[in-house]
Every structure is written in C-alpha cells, then in structure tokens.
Length: 97
Image 1 (cartoon, rainbow, N blue to C red):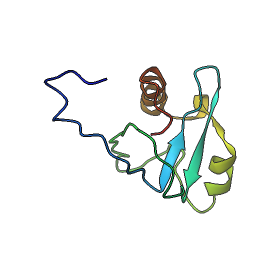
Image 2: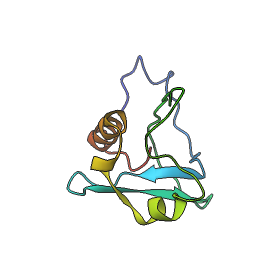
Image 3: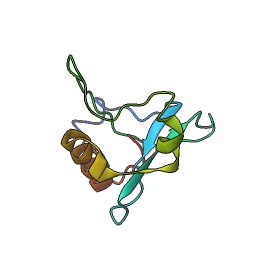
Image 4: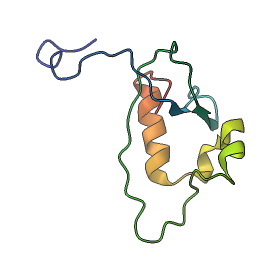
C-alpha cells in the first residue's frame, strides 16, 4: 500500500518485462531467469540499475549461460549488489527483478 503522498509517484501497472529474474522466497538459495513471460502474467517487480564496468568479471546473461540461468543459480554466485537487490525484492514481497 502506498502512502497518500507517494501514490502519484509510483503508478501501478500491469506491465511485466519479457525477461525477469524470479527471486523465489527467502528460504530459497536460488533465483532463475524467466524469458518470454506470457503477456497475461502480471506482477510487480523491482528494478536494479547496474554498471558492469569496463571489464566485467561477473556472471552475465549470454547465449552460453542462458540455459543454466533458466534452471536456476545460487545467489552466492552473484555479485553482492545483486544479492542485496534480491534480499530487498523479497522483503518488499515482490516476485521479480
């Protein structure tokens, strides 16, 4: 529920991107990539704006990693920024980033 002053700042939307990360529940150690989410799927989600840097050494979505990420990946393999974003998303009781 939004505060009265904030309600105009964050309009609710039925839009869900076609590529999201399903964060699961706080009890789970894994998250998974969901691609081509059905347009009928609705859900609130959080967004992480992240700069990879000039020479990223983190796990990234590529054709080679897509299948593994769809099956699920341990949050411990993700950069700390991503782990924190997953924790916040779960605390806000959202399913997706």
